[in-house]
Image (cartoon, rainbow, N blue to C red; front, side, top):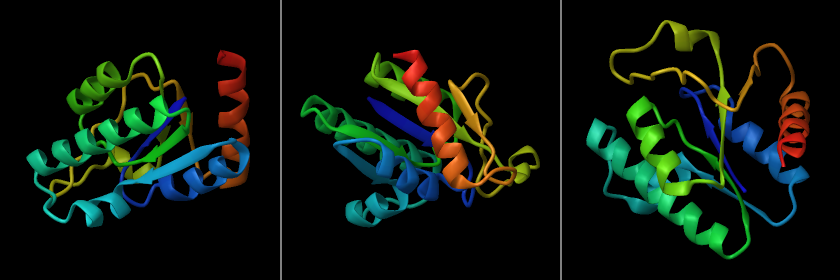
Length: 144
């Protein structure tokens, strides 16, 4: 399984990923900020954001083929980009939108297009990360 956490900067993706990893056997976290520093050659332009997400998706696919459960915590700001990732990782990907109230306002320097129809939406501003992780696990267990 590949769980892809999408949400704006500061929404709680990394915290949720850490909590999910505690509950999912044989899992690996691929964190966008950490991997961006590994790549070293990418900035924050739209093209670089696409390339960062593409590289993370390729790595997730490789690790999943080796029987790891993957938890990705990357902003993935564009609808078109999420569609490309979905096609690349089908049928193994589950999208989790990590919502925050600021997403509705937007930011012209770092745009984020709110997902239309994620499998799961979590609200870390309303519930604890631990409660939201338990809810995600429960929904995923029922969908298998």
